[in-house]
Image 1 (spheres, rainbow, N blue to C red):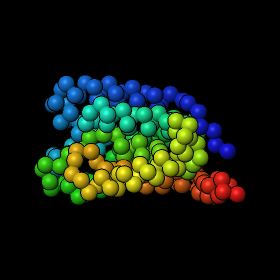
Image 2 (image 1 turned 90 degrees about the horizontal axis):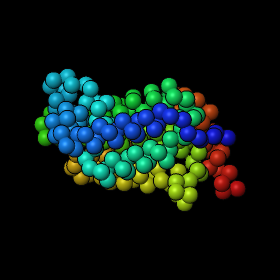
Image 3 (image 1 turned 30 degrees about the horizontal axis):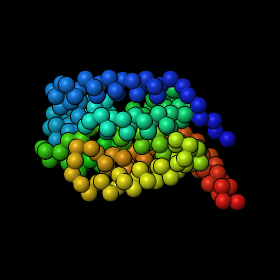
Image 4 (image 1 turned 45 degrees about the vertical axis):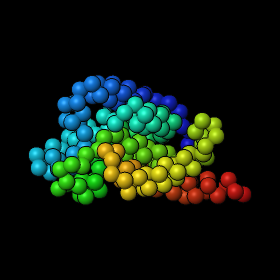
Length: 198
């Protein structure tokens, strides 16, 4: 069985993200420079926006939701190790933004902020390893992940500056990353889920 305990990179990500987000709320020019803006990524080749999007958030509630979720699922770092955990998180920031980049690259008015894509990749990668672990001691990881994804799919129908399509893309990428990292996670996940009902 996979053990999910604490190691430091996830806490560093949380601290840096909170500090940058707090700072950006009082400095609109910083928020504008870091946010995901497909039009400017295409026109000015501002590729860094694919990564810095995870450092800025819409408001305190948005930041709290993302960082609290990352905190709940931080144990994945103990399984992957700091290098692969960092690789998953950072790469998922960019990869989860690709669908919205393709969809909105010619839309001057569309932009998005938040670490949701990367956080969702961590959530779904963790679910493969520990589907029945609990959030707050009451909600199984697998249920939390499914409900979060359903909410994200529903929200893709609404226009906002939170990239809900990135949630879906991040979830898929997290699953793919884990299968590439270790294909045995698939039968392990299936067995773990089925054992709960035996």
